[in-house]
Image (cartoon, rainbow, N blue to C red; front, side, top):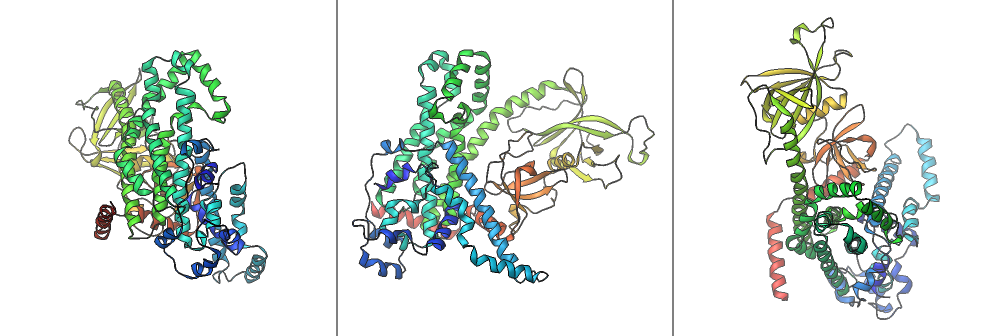
Length: 617
């Protein structure tokens, strides 16, 4: 069986963290490396007589690559047909595996901490725990992962499980960290194959369906499917180059150089596709409502076994999901490569290019939706003061909503007045605050405004139920060119803190942020996906890790996601806290490494790499 045949029949590989746990568990459980069982197989690397020398010598990756012969692969087009998982299924399995791995790592280190002499109050309980540990093999904590990976129905294997790898003896040559790096690169390749299969299904099963072509007008089809054919063509060429790289040697030399080249020269097709998302979603909803034939056809096509119960909409968002996931996969590789090495430079270059593509995709989506939103808001406003132009290409909405304004001066507060609070409505943009009163006809009468940079907020100390969730908003220079003060009451503690964070983003939060560069900070990981409902909220994907910057007693967290430093609010029920400080510190160190700026050493390595490439040519 060829390497790629085995690889793609497995469909996809697990995330690098799961491979870490899996590798450690297997080493401790088996007591020997998988390659030793079939070391007598001819034609797969070193001979049996060479094993002792190989195991004892500190062989480098370069030396290992020279000793392992290339293995030819079948045509990649035939291998694609053997993939068992669609990308949506692969992605869910991979992220859930990542979450479970972190849980187990957290628990393992916590158990080790509890077993240390730190807790002297319960020595008897510690002795009992220590007596139970030898009876329970270390690998048992990874047992749920092993069961999942060995399940034939999951078709979800590791690089080190491939027969060619096990029989070649390469597992006895490579260091554990190099094996984990191989797993991370292997996942990038196999996940791209799974993605290509799903994207090809979107085109062949939905877009090119004969009835679909008759039902949709060409303009409707163009909005709905955009430039998906261009995206598919790029994925096809990208996958082919990755497969050729794997054919060179069963030990993968690198994949980030290919990623870098495609991100720089070809992945602009993703920006075009993703930027159309707002119009795509609107067109899809409109077609479902207005065209019964389209609605019936989509329902019929979704029932086809090829789709595995997945909705048509999940296929439409594949390109956006893939480009963001690809950046994370490169991050996983970057965490495993040797520091200040050629492969680290290549991974950093690839990651930087992917960040630019993802940022352009996000900006494309936001630009389309923001322009329409600003036009809608402008139409609803009536100015009691001097008119302020709302529509601007550099302005967008951060938060809007109703608050209660306290009546009268602060010194004359009394519950005997007719009404202590009056409703006002705030529109907060990235550079401007507009204060209104809602009037009949879904209109807003503007009576004050101020640049966002001239806003200050102060939380009012608890003064009883009536004044709970009250804060002070100061406009250092308002529409009348004077200072103004508003005492505002929110509906809940979380709403108050959310307004204060949005109005004055630079105020000190309860906890430190990623940019503080401290090696510990409260952290959570996402265990349930969450879609932002308000502009100040953060959409969460499974397995996202976030620093906690602030939190409320009623279940909301203000967090900063580590892999892209995006900030926002989200329900605490969507996450679980990472309790162990060693895991939190490790997460931060990895992110510092991923996002570190160019340094002279890296530039020198990059120049050497270019020179070496020219010499090879």
